[in-house]
Length: 123
Image (cartoon, rainbow, N blue to C red; front, side, top):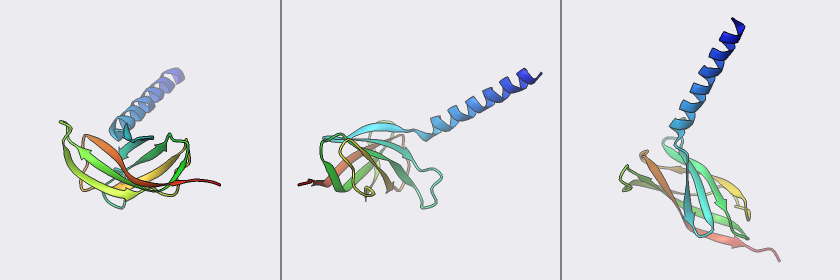
């Protein structure tokens, strides 16, 4: 009997985890030369609708003052909304930094573009 209860609990937990991860819609997209981004809608955010994620710097130099644009795309790949914001802090070489971009609506997919950044050079 205990075995059946444990198996049932394990199945319920697995189904719950799968449904949570399916609803997150996390995607990885190219964000410009030397960058890529992981994004997902901030469905539980208290600051309104937003897209959150990580910006990865695949380059050999750290960058600062990174400005992003997140485009909200419909099922056909057409832009239906967009938002812009700065990445929090510096993005180390071969590292990542968190971002939060307010958007007016959610969509099927998201495209992240790095609009500008300052390269940090150590001497």
